[in-house]
Length: 559
Image (tube, rainbow, N blue to C red; front, side, top):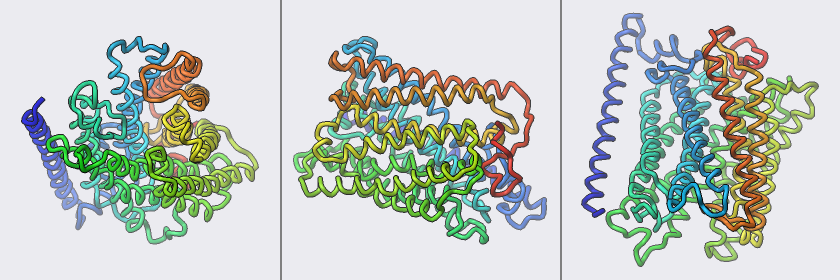
C-alpha cells in the first residue's frame, strides 16, 4: 500500500472521527439547552444547582439513562459497563490464545500464527486500558461524589466527551487487528503488512492516542473533584483512603502518559516520513524508553485504586477500622514516585550499562517497602478483628492479598540483575504480572461490583451460590495458570510465541487448564447477572460502600 493510500485512509478516518465528535457535541448542547429550560421553570438560577439537587449524589442503576446524563455517577456507570464488556472481549481472546498452545507445534492457527500475535495484542491492550483503567475510572466517578460529599458536579460535559473519545479509541484498537503487542515497538509497528504490525496498525496508534486523550481529561476532572470540589467538612487529612489512592494514581497518570503519547505521535509520523525511530540517526530504543516511562506506572495505575478499595471493603466485614490510616496514606504516597523510577528494569537487558542497571535494580527493591507496608496494614486489620465475615467480596479481598504477596515476591526476585538476564523474556514475567493483575485488579474489581450490586441493579440481590462459584473458580484457575507460567518461565519457557519446545508442554498444559477454569468462572458471573435481572427488585438501592458516608449501614451489599 502506497503512502497516498495511507493518507487517504487516515484522512477519511479522521473525518469520520470529527463527524462523530461533532454529533456528540451537538447532542450535549441540545441536552444542556433542554436542562436550562427545565431549571428555569423550577426557579433555579443555574442548571448545575438544579442537576445536583435532582440527580447528583443519588444511586444510579445500569441502563440507558447513564449514557444520556452527565453527572459523575452516570459517567461512572458508563465506564463500569464498558470495562465489563471489554473484560469479556479481552478474556475471550485470552482463552483462545491459551487453547491454541495445546500442542508445541501450532495447530489451531496452522500457517496463520499471526492470529496468535493479534490475539496477544488485543488481549493485553484491552485488559489494561479498558478493564483495569476503565473500571478504576468507573469506581472513582461513581463513589467519590458520595465519599467526598462533593459541592458541585460541573464538569460533566468534559467527562462525557472524554468517555466517548476513550470508547472510540478502543473500537479502533479492535478494528485495527494490530499485532505489535501492547508496547508498539518500532520498527515492527511501522511495517504495515499482515505479517508484521498488521495492515491497519496506524488505526491502532490513532486509537491509542484517543484513549490517552480521554483518560487524561477524565483524570484532570477527577483530580479537581478530589482537591477542589469536596465538601468543606471533608478535610484532606480525613479523606477516605480510596480517595487518596485515586489521587496518587491520577497524578501518576498525568505525569507519565505524555511520554508515550509523544512516542505514539512520532510513530504515526514515521508511517509517512520515517525520521524518528527507524532512520540512520535514530534508535528504536528511544521509543522503548518513552513507552516504559509510561508502561511501568500503568501497572501501578491498575493496582493503586484497588488498594484503596480494599481499605474501604475490609471494615464492612471485619467490624474494625483500618489498622493504621497514616501508614496507609504514606504507603500509597510512596508508591507514586517510586513506581515512576523503576521503569528501566524492563530494559535491563538492552545495554543500559552497569550504573543504570544498579540504579533501576535498587529502585525495584525499594518499591517493596511501601507495598509491604500496605500488605501488613491489611494483615493487621484482619488480625485485630474480633470476627471476619467471609462473604464473596471479602473472599476476593483475602485472595487478592495472597496473590499479591506471591506476585510481589516473584517481582523482587527478578530485580536481581543476574537473575533478570535469565528470566527476562520468559513466562516468569507473565506469571508475576498475572498473579497481581488477576488477584488485585480483577479480583477487587469484582468484589467492588458485588458490593455495589443493589445500586447498580436498581435494588436486586445477587445469587450468593453463583457468586461463590465465580470466586472459587477464578481463584483456583488464576493460581494454576499463573503458577504454571512462573515455574515454566524459571526453566526458560519463552513467552509471546505461538509454538514452543516439547519439554515445556507440561507447563503450557497447566496454564491452559487454569486459563479455561478462569474462563468458565466468568460464565457464573454472567449467569448471576441474567438470574438477577429475571427477578424484580426486592431490596433497597443503597450499598455498603457508600452507606458509611451518607446512608444507614446495609449489612453486606445484598448478600
